[in-house]
Image (cartoon, rainbow, N blue to C red; front, top):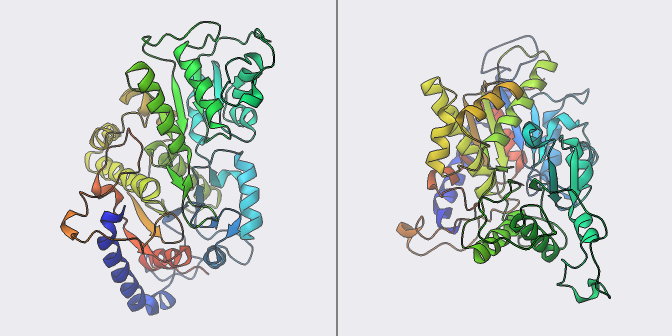
Length: 442
């Protein structure tokens, strides 16, 4: 994303100047949208926080996160605005992630405030009774059960049942020829939660399942199309941990899988659905949790604005801006089917399951239609995004020289990777939001 840096840096400077000019206003105006009130202010906005690179780096807390969350909770430890944590991680349960965040941030967080990349899978009910192969790390069987799948097979189960399939590591090859230990049921779909530990094993066995249409007792059928339904969570090419540079994410694993499949078959690998940021479905799911929090707190005013805070242009910013585009289309046309137009404009036909009618019915039955009218993106400089990266000498060629790190099925649109604001860290982001909303917690 080096090509967009001149614009970003200029925006960062403008934002900081505006923040300084407005600093006095925030302390003197009360509560809700600038109106005076003797009661506690009720928010009309909700916050969507990315985790890695925004709040933590690996297991290390980013100091600004502690400062930010001191402003977001009252003296009773309750959030003063609706808050949801939206992460592309997929290696644990929502409750586990909530417990981790509670411990590291020092504020109580429930599983209903957390969205993992696999959380929207609970809406794909047509697959819940099918026999599915799951790939990832962590308690994959428990995660699958938690989101609704009832008949699950792991990569390890396949490897144990068919020991001759995993042959890259010579030390793990069977010493003597063997036949299948257990005849597994025919696999009907494949679900990818996140990057696995042994990439060579997962790549081999997933390809085997796809090319045999789930019957591993048969040879590959390289010309059999379409292949089994494939659902993938987390499209992050890279993510930020403790190292100085970003690390491979599940998006990198998907690049490997897609290219191996195409090299063998000559055709593109197709996804039934792609979940996690930047998918619109993930943001719609997040908005439903924001609304639920507001209802539980008996805040009567509708939540009309969302603010998405992240460190990755290709997931956090792209996704927030794409959802904002959907909300604008919907508000202009008063038609929920405008999501199809957004999908067509961004090339993200695989971001949602099925066609328009299936999307609408799933959203209406599971989440209700959105109430927000905007989703504003804020980029922080504590993670993947590097404000000090080298800039091309010819500024007029910046966009042309941009390398698109997004998923293959999401077409690059320069407007979607331009953040609404750039700030130093998450504490500055919270200050900026409070200023823009003229919100003073009491």
